[in-house]
Length: 293
Image (cartoon, rainbow, N blue to C red; front, side, top):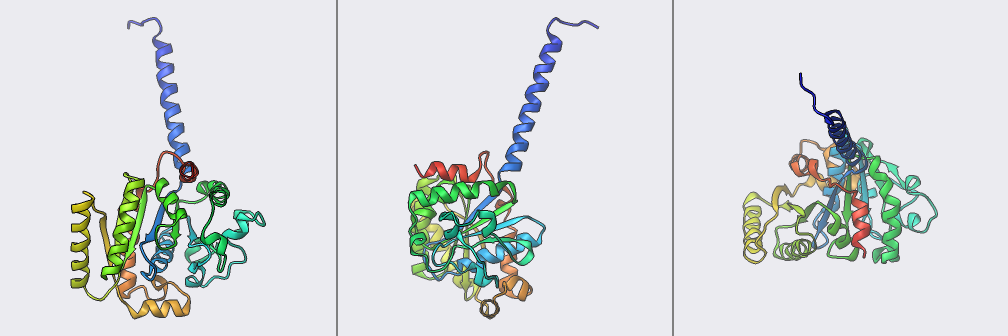
């Protein structure tokens, strides 16, 4: 068998490159959790109900899930989950506790980082505030499989910075004209700052399928005509008295009434395939830090 000079060296170099590539891929997988941003164009769409149930449903599948309530100052995810956190994002920004100390365990084993209630400063965070938070949150990406970020309604600074760094967003809207208009405005802005953002649309609290179909046709037509792109329709979540009961009882409808129409639709949202690919080659909070400047 003929051997050529330098062949062993070439083989070693090829193997070294392959091992280095494999190591980088392992590091990306280990260090970067999948991140999905939950947003809405206006308040009252039931966005936080969707975010909390999504987090619970994914945690019940065995995933390590972190829910970050970034509706800072007006947070209510802890109420929907029946929790009473001692610390929140504000305490982390102030340096009073570490981010680990601020986490609290919720249904299904998920972890919640609350946004706090009545914190005016966090309702309009500065660049410095967000920089502190992002640096504090970055290490959590090694500890969780999925991070669900529940944003405040509208196109606030914190939301836009997150969307600039994100790969995946769920946009929650109602079927009414005002809800559609505000959702369109948010979708347009998100596409302007991040053209590669994968967006799923959820119509919440719809009275019937005909109303939902009509709303989707109007929304899709406007997006195609003026933006030349459309989000992916993920689900219609029907108006359901069991959701109101779950809010009153401070338990997610997915566990309180798993066979209710709303819970079944929310289960469909939790199975959205894009949630399994909401990861990039660099850590989310590293990209968010860069988006600040």
